[in-house]
Structure formats: structure tokens, C-alpha cells
Image (cartoon, rainbow, N blue to C red):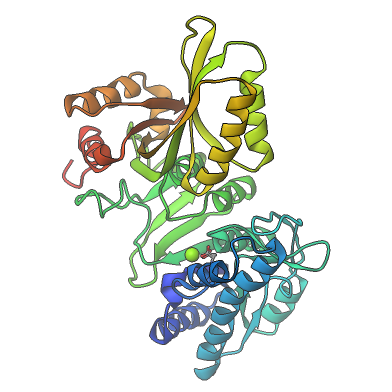
Length: 410
Ligand code: ASP
Ligand code: MG
């Protein structure tokens, strides 16, 4: 008998039929002899709809009230799913995040899970219940509801799997697993059977949207095996686990495991900054203070004791970044601030890069042969990312996928 955490994403519980379908999958798992804890997201686009509703009321909602609102989405799912399971005659109970013993810090709308007390879940499991837990929400030290950031139900699922020492954490969505590239962009993309935590982290951080990056960090920390698979088929999906565990399957490790893209990028350039110590510290310190995550950074060589700094942030941070940069630029007497919204990041990811030099050169060569201009570059041990014009993005992804031989045929 195994203990399994099954997480269903919003598209898997988007309407009554899909809820019933998910209920049947859950019941089948239970009948096969496993103990089952289920985590669900809000149905379909509910979270986006709630955000829109709030936006119609005010552009500056209190974060606490935002969390009160957003947490209702997942409560729709847990209660309806429990009804669907009860209707078939199985023992079931739904729990909110706080009822399930999930505590987080006080950082509203992007809280971090601090502790899980799984006592109640265990009691219900012992009494033969299927336990359904609302994803994305927790209780903060003040006794208020917080939410865990977009896609946070994945985090709930993985954290619960760690806390309960579950054998598997199955993440069900509307895709078959993690692909070598987004199949909507690359027609012959392949499903990947095994990925290491680090590869998945780099892929999630560079645009692959199958799993929330923070959930993968937690899975890595606690050794939770994630199985990302489709709600709508019986096929095996992608297992995300440690490098040691997949060592065997990956004997001839590919150079590159996947190609990703991220359109959610904006490039800022500050022109003619003084070339003196403390300038970068000031700019990025101030941005950190207002909660802006900076991704790629380049600084040009100094000419006449002045240089330019360019960097990217996510589109959702564009407005506040621009306002802050205008202030900083005038304080530092820089010439001006330029914002380019029409950029995209394309990345290649793979643990095979560690032991193979020349992957970057090959990437640049593939892009240059198609006349694609590279605006910025960043590298890590297992990832190379380039900022390109948004108009070139799809072509870049396709060519890289082909060039690194990731297609079905190769
Ligand atoms: N409903 C939340 C969101 O849309 C959490 C989740 O789906 O994981 O971000
Ligand atoms: Mg979701």
C-alpha cells in the first residue's frame, strides 16, 4: 500500500464533467489499495477572474483582502470534488489549507510555507477517507489566510507529500508531461521521460509552465518524486527526480534536454551612468526593496567614465520598475531610461552541458545561421539563455530544437 498525493490543476476541474472525471481517477487509485491525499487548484480560470473582479473595484487592494478573495477559488474545487466522490459512495472529506495544518509566513499573496502539521490529515486517512486539500492557501502567524503565489497548488502538493512522506506526488494537468519544447511552437516536440530537479528548475525558471518553480525546489530539498502527467489519459508522464535516480535511464545523456521560451520579459537600459563604485548596488538594491526580481544583467564597457546597464524583469513588474528607475536615473544624473517590451528569452537546458564544452557556441551558431540577433546572454552550469527580439522567438525555439536534435525522429 502506497501513500499518494494527487494534485489536479485548474483545467482538470474546470467544470462538472471534469470534476467527475477527476473523482473517478481518485476513487480508482483508492480502490487499487493506496491511501490518497488530493490537492486541487481553483476551477479553470477562476483565479484570473477573481483578480479581474478585484481590479474593477480598486487598483490598490489590501493584500490581506486579496488573499481572502483568491483563497475562495480553491474552496469551490475542494467542496465540489468532495461532493462528486461522496456521490459515488466513497468516504471523503475536504479541508482548507488552514484546516489541513498548513502554516505560512505573513507575506500576503506570495507567502512561504513554514510548517505543516499533518495530524488531521492522518486521522482522516486512518479512518479510510480520501482527503482533499485546497491548494495555494495557508494560515499565517496572525491567523489570517495567505496565498502562496501563482501556481501555488503545486507547492501545496509537494510540501504535503514531503510532510506525509508520500511515495509519489502526481501532478495532473492537461498536458502529458514536460516536453522538449512547447508543442504549440514545435510540432515534433517529444515528451521527456525523466528530468532531474535541476533541469526542471531551470526549465520552469526560463518559461516552461508545467510546474511552479518553487514546488520543484521543495521537491529537491526533500527528495519528493514528482510525476507530471495528464488527467485525460492513462499514459506515463514525466518523472522529476534526483540525478542519481535517473542516472541509469540517461546513460547517454543528451547535451540538451529541452528548449524553453519566456515572452514575459521586458528589457530596461539606463544610458550614461557614472562609472563609479556603488552604482549597480544602488540600482539593484532599490529594485530589490520594491520587490522586483531582476533576471539578466549586462553592463557595457566604460567610455569617458560612463557606461550603460541593461537588465530584464518580468512584464508584471514593468510599471513599478520604470517609475523607480526614472527616479534613480535622475539621482545618478544618467542620460535616460529605455524600456523595450518586445523581447523574449530563449533557453537551452540540460545536465549534459556540464561535461560538454561548446554548447553555447553551438547555440549562437544555430541562431546566427538564421539571422537572429542576440541582445543579451546569460549562462549557468546547465542552462544558456539569450534575449532576442520577440518576433524571432518562435523561429529561434524551432531551430534550436532541430539543431540540438530533440525531435521525435532524431
Ligand atoms: N489557483 C491558483 C493560480 O491560478 C493556484 C494554482 O492554480 O496552483 O495561480
Ligand atoms: Mg493553476
